[in-house]
Image (tube, rainbow, N blue to C red; front, side, top):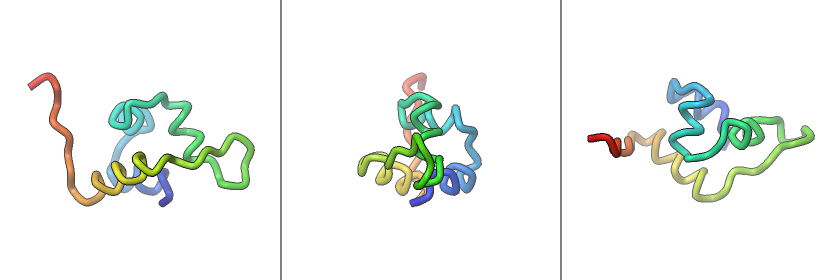
Length: 65
């Protein structure tokens, strides 16, 4: 799964996508590096599954409700 393409498809900024994953923007940026680039990190299985759920229409509830 290409996380940058997924993020763009969802219409989310880097900081919004990172917040949904409860990760730093730097961590998400490492997911978005080309696989052969220095600094690339493979997203965890749970991060991939959560992103796929978002693509499939899942929306988490806000804790502020």
